[in-house]
Amino acid sequence: MKSPYPILVLVGGAAIGIATAAIAMSAQDNKPASPIFKVTVPDGYRQWQLIAPAQEGAPLNELRAVVGNTTAIKAYQRGAQPFPDGTVLVKLAWKHEQSPEFESASIPGAPTTVQVMVKDARKYASTGGWGFGRFIDGKPADEAQHRTCFACHEARAKARDYVFTRYAP
Amino acid sequence: MKSPYPILVLVGGAAIGIATAAIAMSAQDNKPASPIFKVTVPDGYRQWQLIAPAQEGAPLNELRAVVGNTTAIKAYQRGAQPFPDGTVLVKLAWKHEQSPEFESASIPGAPTTVQVMVKDARKYASTGGWGFGRFIDGKPADEAQHRTCFACHEARAKARDYVFTRYAP
Image (tube, rainbow over all chains, first blue to last red; front, side, top):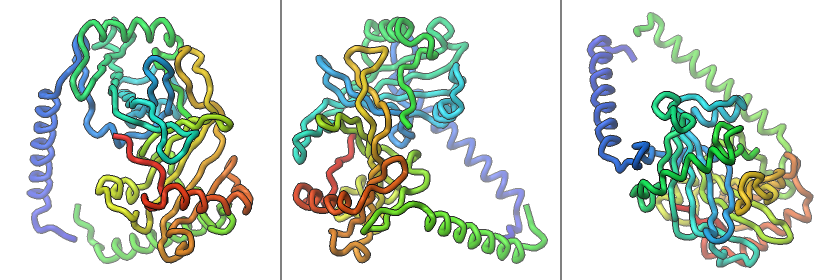
C-alpha cells in the first residue's frame, strides 16, 4: 500500500488528469453545437437520473423522458429556483408506439429529438440564463427553430425558471 | 499520503466494511417484502438509469418509467439474455395527468405503484428465475396480486426472458 515514490505518483496522476481534461475539452469543441446558443449534446447524458417521463399528443405523438445532471437533480431536491449555473437538462423523445405484447401499452419507437437546456446566467442573460439545443440524429436543428425555444419557455414557464418539467416522485 | 499503520488502517477499514454490510442487511430485512417472493423495494432505485418510459391506457391511465441497476443496464447493452443473477428492474408508475402549461402534453400525477423484478435463477426457479414485488405507498400488494405476475410475464414475454421493457435508445 506504500509507494516508494508518493510525490512522483501524485505528479504523474495530475499530469494524466490534465491530459484527460484536455482531450475531453477538445472532443467537446468538435461536437455539433446549436445555432445561437452553441449548446452541445452532453457526454453520458443517457446515464443521468430521470426527472420525469411525459407524453406528447398529436401531432407529435411522442413519449419523452427528461433527465438531469447532478447539479440539476440537487436543485430539484432542494426545491430551490432559479437553477444554479451548470444545471443541464436533457429531454429524450421517441415516437409513441403500440406495444407488441400489450394492447393497452405504448412504448418508445424511433428516437425523434434530443433537446438540451444549459444554465449559465451570464452567458445566456438575454434568454433567462438558459442556452438551448435541439438535435435530430445528433445534428442541431436550424436557427429558426432555435429562435422559438425561449419564447415558448418564457410565455409558459417563466415562474418556474423557464423549466416545464417537475420532478416525478 | 503514507500511513504509519497501514495494516491497522486496512483491518479497521475491513471492520467498518463488515459493519456497514451488516447494517445494510438488517435494514433490508426490516423492509416490507412481497408475498411469495420476499422481494423488497431496492434502496436508491430512483437514481438508477432509465431503460424506457411507457404509457398505459385505460383503465389505468398511467405514465411509467422502468429503471435498472448496473447489472441490468450492462445486460441490456450486451443484448444478452437471459439476464444474469443480480439483475433488478424497477417500474415506477404515476397517474397520467394533463400538463397545466401545455395542452398537448401529459405528465406524471400521483404515484400509483412501484414494481420490482429480481433475477435469481436458483431462488426463483419455478418462476423463470424472477422474483416479483408490487408496492403501493411502499406496502406490498396482497398474495393474490402476486400470483398474477409470472403468469402474465410467461404468457406474453417468455421469449425475452419474461421482460417486457426494451431499452429506449
